[in-house]
Every structure is written in C-alpha cells, then in structure tokens.
Figure (cartoon, helix red, strand yellow):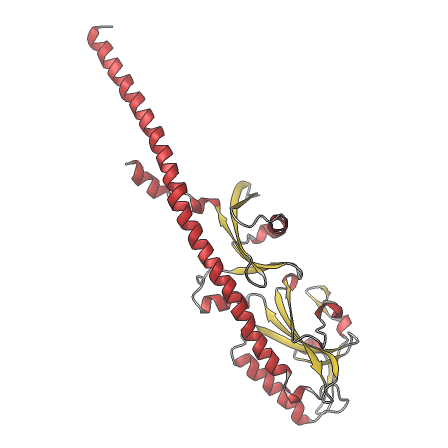
Length: 305
C-alpha cells in the first residue's frame, strides 16, 4: 500500500468513526428530547382531558339526579299501587315520562317502580314488562322473573333505595347502564318501594361530545363492577376481559399512571399505557398505544436530515 493509499484509508476510517460517534450522540440527544419534552407534553394533554372528563361525570350525574328526583315526587306516581287507578293518572304518568325523554334526558331507556317485596312491579315504561292493561288497571310481570341480556335482572336488594337515602346510583357495566334509584312513597306518605331510572351507559360519551370535551369518534366505555366502576377510553373490545383484569389488578395495587399493558393482537404484540383519574364517583381512565409517545416517523426523518 502506497503512502497515499494509507492516508486515504486513515482518513476514511476517521470519518467513519466520527460519523458513528455523531450518530450515537444524536440518538442520545434525540431520546432525551423525546422523553423530556415530547412525552411530557403528551402526558399533560392526557391528564388535562381526564380532569375534564372526571369533572363532567359529576356534573352529568347531578343533572340527571335533579331531573329524576323531580319526577319521583310527582303526585301522579303515588297511586300506582292502588288496585283501581284513574285514566287521568295513567295518562298523566305517560305525559310526564314523555316530557322527561324529550326534555333532554337523552339516555333514559326506562323507569320501574318495584315494591319492597322485590317482586311486584307497580309501574314500568318497558312494554316487555306489561301483562295486561285497560283504562283503570295495569299489571306487570314479577321483577324476580325478569331477564336482561340473557341473565336475571339485578336482585332487588342490590337496586333497593331505602327510605333513609335521597337516592342511590349503580353503575351496571355488565349491561352498560347507569341505574338511578329513589325511595318510593305512596299517597299516604308511606315508604313502599323503589323508583328506578335506567340510563344507557354510552350516554355519558354523548354528553362529553356535546360539550366538546372529546372528539366525535372518542368513546369512554363503562367497565368494572358495581363496587368498582370506571369509564375508560382506548378500551380494545377484543381484549375486554384481559384489559378489565389488568385495570382492576393495577388499581388494587395503587398503580394508576404510566403502567404498561402488553398483549398479542392479530398475532402481533401491542402495548398500551394506562392513565387514571380517581376524583369522580367512578374512575376515569385512558389507554394509549405506546406509539403515541414516540416521535412520528416524519419528524424523526426530518431531524436526521
């Protein structure tokens, strides 16, 4: 090898080493900016949304609590346990229900009044509950014989609202509904049972979209149990059981944020990051794909140029 060739080879090796060192240095700096600034910004945006959703859940529930409380106090309801009822009362109840639905209670699916024996239904807006009807008499099926989605209805002891309470709220995630219950008093002011208002669980997302808190395609899905309910965004329906177990397990351990969930989906491994807000009457959570926290490919390419 001539002297010139040695110099050229030495120069090429030096350039190569410099390039490698520069790339490694840049990658480290790139990783720093991605972690320190980009990911931090994303997390702040997520937490701000969860705060807004959490606050909105309490507002949303309070709106319906007030409406249902007013309906429960209507005099036309007091006579539902009488064997003979006036046509005027029956019509008045139908009108009140129509006003409730058209007055902005968009998620309401039905109402029942159940006697304290947990069997007699004295009022229901569900046509499937009805046995017989004429101008002065209505009869319904027994509550303990009703089914929903192939399973028996919730036991009366679960949905009952005792006379010492103003109301009670149940998040029935298995049937995607929120149940508002109130004590029922007859025309003699005696406590006789419970008034139940059933609201579609998806109505909360409708409320959030109406207030421009979430996007048109976003959805906060109800999950968990009556004792530990939650609304979560980014819930993968095909992994419902796995994700549900993952959420409950981590929350029981006190792990609320920046927790990774990894699972195979379509034969590929996917990872999501969990974020949680515990300020509302139900947990508000979000699962984001891990890729959300990485620089988009186009940004990476531009930075490398």
